[in-house]
Image 1 (cartoon, helix red, strand yellow):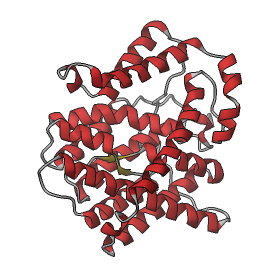
Image 2: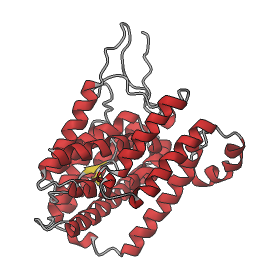
Image 3: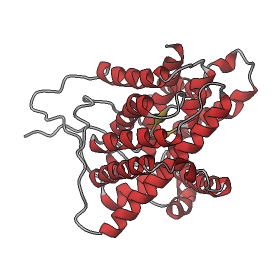
Length: 339
């Protein structure tokens, strides 16, 4: 129970942030976190691994949203889950580990650079562009038009994360991401009331977006499905192996892990959620917080669902409460439509 609450407090802001950075609806992050916790936690082969939306797929999802739109991206996520199921039933889980760690690290490093260039614009108070080159070219203008409150808040969060490992062990029992988000939120409430915030209006049921097949360009669609399936599978398996090294309990069944991840992605894509993978940040937090069984991962998904249910507000009369389905521009904000 204590471990599940700690993981919940870490996973909640990370899921929202990954959704925002991906250009997906904000609620898609909570849908994926809920399904990743409950479904992948129950069916996966790694008892202590925690699954949910992952930063490693942020750039991939952002590109798919821009190319296909959100509902087709959901279909790609569901189809990638089917591929993962087939890989798991084919018992090729260990084959994925034959991929050189250098290749995986280089891929993640490239994704990291792209995310940095994108989020620098957010810290500076401007809107990120669609590609890394555009974001790099737009940095001088963003620096010239700096929004001071946003920049100071962003730098404060980064500073806390970088310095957290040097603090006394008693303080480090609180996860660094949780402390950074809490401190940044407190500073924003106290000194920067005008800074843009994430809106969580409406219920999680209203956020459900049924997947939609593309009108054409099936070759690109198939390539996107395979790309997402392979990246999500490799990231999940490598994370599971890392978790095994952190604890002395049962080892991961890699084929079962692929089946659990595939099932979670089929459900997440079908309900309008982000892709789900095993996530090392949440998994390491789970182990360090004293988790002993898969119940912790499952409960963290239950707490996210309960949080969203508790935040639900009644819709005004005459409003449909449906979510705008455009690209990432809306950032998941809900706008009532008057009939």
